[in-house]
Image (cartoon, rainbow, N blue to C red):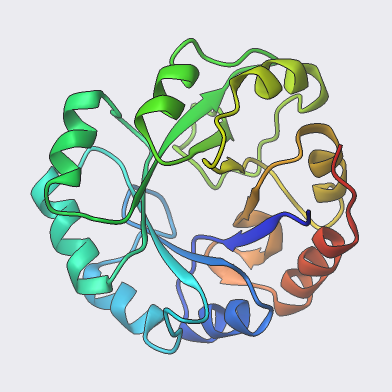
Length: 218
């Protein structure tokens, strides 16, 4: 089955609308950190032209309080909360009290080894996002990791009916190799389709979509 696509780090309404035109399953806005970080008001403007019937909305968070996350999810009508920081059972349970959508913890991969927390994070969340570790930022750095070398670990980790989301340096030029190695349910791209941080290149977005459609998972 072809992987679903998430275009993340959206900062302009025209980019979010183009992602929906390309039939992306997910559109993401960032509240964690970095040059793509938005205010709630700006995120509302960015997502205003994207119907929830067309694409699911993802908010990317770090260590915000459960109340702040719930408020953002309510204002933006988020379908998914992506947690790039603490994802303990207690924190996830607290978020679930006021948020009925999916929660995706993030595990950041160093080299060719999954972090020990990956299995627990997958069991606690409604999916798991694998990203490349970088000292520079929580995400959006364009850094990849060794897909083929962790393929067996990932296969053993998977949980039925929960999506495995792959991020970290994906581009039109390499996404087919990533899919062939790990067969993710969702591929998540941000910097790999940009002309500058937060500015999506529509030709590269289309090329990414085409590469995913043409890919063959394991």
